[in-house]
Amino acid sequence: MLQLIYISTARPGIGLADVQNILAASRRNNAAHRVSGLLVFNGKRFLQALEGDESAVEAAFARITADDRHRAIVTLSRRAITTREFGDWAMASCGDVDSDQTAMIETIDALVASVPDANTRETFRSFSRIARAA
Image (cartoon, rainbow, N blue to C red; front, side):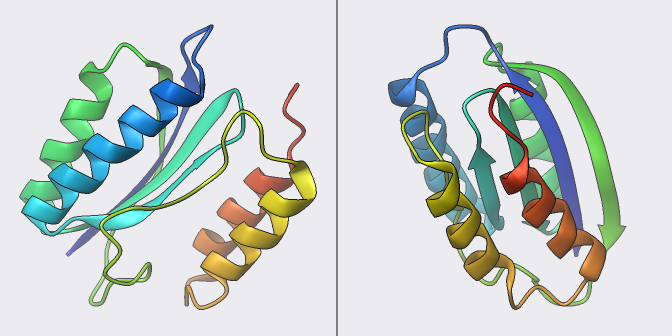
């Protein structure tokens, strides 16, 4: 099984409706291909973990890299895992352009609390603490 984590910058002007559309498409596609993970948006950047069969994760990532709503995509981690660290979520999510920072931090901390890999857990915890203007 493959786990891939990336960060990207959102296209300027992206709004809540765009994020909701991304999330809906992610959940639909991921459920069909047994890809799970977590998607976080802080108003400027996306951070996402994808987990599943290698070919399914690579196909999902190819769709993401072709999506013009993402710019400057950087792969932070790509590693083999034996069990899903983010559970069987089709795509859990946190954050939208109207969320307050404290609520986002608390939600992310709760979502990643059981992730066994400390680096993965801290990647998401740190991201939630970065100010939107960053």
